[in-house]
Amino acid sequence: MEGRTLFHVNSTMTGGGVAELLGSVLGYLLGADVRSRWLVVEGDEDFFVLTKRIHHLLHGKDGDQGDVGRAEADVYQSTLTRELAPIADQISRGDVVVLHDPQVVGLAPHLRRMGASVIWNCHVGADAPNEHTRRAWKFLLPAASSADAQVFSRAQYIWEGLDPNCVAIIPPCIDAFSPKNQAMEPGQVQSVLAATGLLRRPWSGDDAVFTRVDGSLGRVDHAARMIEESPLPPDAPVVTQVSRWDPLKDHAGVAQSFAQAVPPDLEAHLVLAGPSPESVADDPEGLATFEELRSCVASLPELARSRVHLACLPMDDIEENAAMVNALQRYSAVVVQKSLAEGFGLTVAEAMWKSRPTVASAIGGIQDQICDGRTGVLVEDPKDLDACGKAVTDLLRDRTASDALGRAAQASVLDNFLAPRYLGRYLDLIETIVASR
Ligand code: UDP
Image (tube, rainbow, N blue to C red; front, side, top):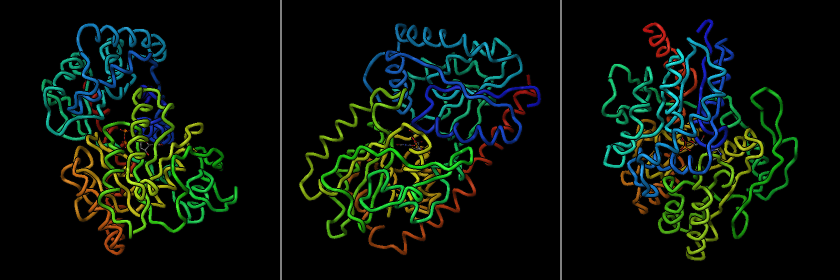
């Protein structure tokens, strides 16, 4: 990389897996003296409605059922043409640019013409391609195939029509030292959750702290917006799902499965947590999905309703938000990820790293992370509410088995999904591309 800069480009600085990934890998790159930059394209509502549609299509779902034709290509291209100029100003011949996800792949042909080596990393995909996936491929293929290489999280996601010699499989990673995943003492976990408003207990400002990426001390100052009938009881076992408010994460399904299949005598409570819904720039569906979830929870039977807590975690300070997620995952007796589709599912690796027993749908990249019965529990049919609830119940009842799953889970993440492993794979790919140009 000597004399070259490595650029990462995506479409949001906060919220979602890619922002999470870039926030941590950039530090490792800079620490290894690789000159690195992260650029974010901006778009208007039309652009993000379209790219969210494409996101759903790539997952094999029909999303908002809109078109991806000539008019949409104009919306897409005009935004990226406008965004290209400030990006192009910073990039020199020989630099390496990694474009993340469909929002920015349209920049590939332009950047390549400027003499940059371009990698497109597609973080989403469908286990079995269908007519929806193929519509998205058709829309994006000319841009995607103009990149020097295309990176997918798993082999099943590779597109038809790409040159197999230019494709690499690199699953994403988590950063063990980031505010999201750094070690926390049990007292610190409880204080962070108390400061967030999730637990009602006295806490000291000196305990509701975390270490920022720059090494300084951070303090949890903002509270979550809680939608709940009453606060979490101090000793209740907590079942958690943390995700953006996206229909594919199926928060409502988690709530229903909890209500119908986790017996009340376990006295467990469910926390569904996500970013405050207005805050994720490239996700226009967040608010509507959250409101639907609220009505779904409001319609649950009374006993179940009183055990479900919705937490909108403030995004004023992204590292503070990460510390809240960290504490919540560590506090949880069981972590669920009942997604209907998932490119990789960083939340699963995050929970596993914290030695939590996880129950997750056997879909997408989750299958590459959880070995069923050894490092977590996979639920075969993501729509099977009873199966999900039963798996949660079994883990709540058998703490010895849960602990064993949690320990094996952490060991597996240590081997496979931490940042150094990811960066090693990426730098190998870059070496090949730069050498061949
Ligand atoms: N996340 C977060 N704050 C929130 C909700 C989610 O930091 O309030 C993070 C979560 O911890 C994970 C990422 O957002 O690191 C979501 O990545 P994942 O791959 O699970 O799903 P995506 O959002 O990319 O579909």
